[in-house]
Image (cartoon, rainbow, N blue to C red; front, side):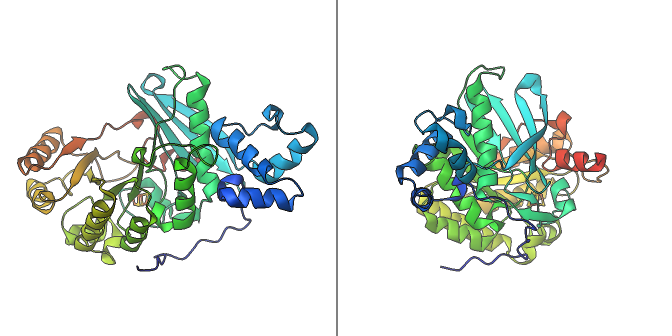
Length: 370
Ligand code: SF4
């Protein structure tokens, strides 16, 4: 197995984020508890409060002696993210939260409510080093990787909002998680894997959400996909392809200069073979750039014998950008051609356009105000 090497330098955090129980394995939680001179089970108790009851409020931890609660909270649940703004749209069915981290860095998460599910889209990095020219996040570069605690906190916050009954659908349960916010998850590999464990381990060690309800999206870091294949976490893999030809992809998704389409699809095929999970191909439709019928034809030929599903995403234009969404008729023709090859295809509903919905836009507009 190839060892994952990050393709860009690891960004250094000036001041490290405090360690949180979500950065620890269940065993480490028990160890930390013992190091504090407490019985190991206190580590499990605090994880139960956090993952099962979604509580980081020591006043609610009634099974822990009152005089210990503050010390335990300080050690296990330090405050990692602080809500800066919430914007809602679609009659409250889409909610975008902007979070400030301990060092002032801003990241976003988006909660989307559907009749049958509640999905949160989370950020795994502050900014992104992949430099895709059509993406707001890519334009700002990579600020730093998030810790597992910082990623997990976005998910637990969304789960709390769902459980609170304050949403238009009343009380509900967070059911799906997608790593499609700011950042390239596989370029922040270990914290993302720890987060996947926090999501999928049963209570009290994790949130107990099925891996089938979790999607990890990548721009095509082949060594990361290979490593993920070996983890045995059967989440859904989404590959942001955006075009079926290397020539255009080299400029649309610059990492393509290192990992060509053929290699990316081979790695996704191997993932599908090992996990039995159909993967998805993400394709942002950009007017007159990658939405021609011949490209739909080429994509159809590439995918017709693969267990893949295409998600077409009408591009959400970023302010001042020359890139814009495809014409309706070109989008429909693209779908028709893919279907003629028997390739399953959906056009993604673009939630949150009115609230700076493209990844990175809310953080970018907030930064511009300061
Ligand atoms: S599209 Fe995704 S991978 Fe590319 S720069 Fe934006 S966040 Fe990064």
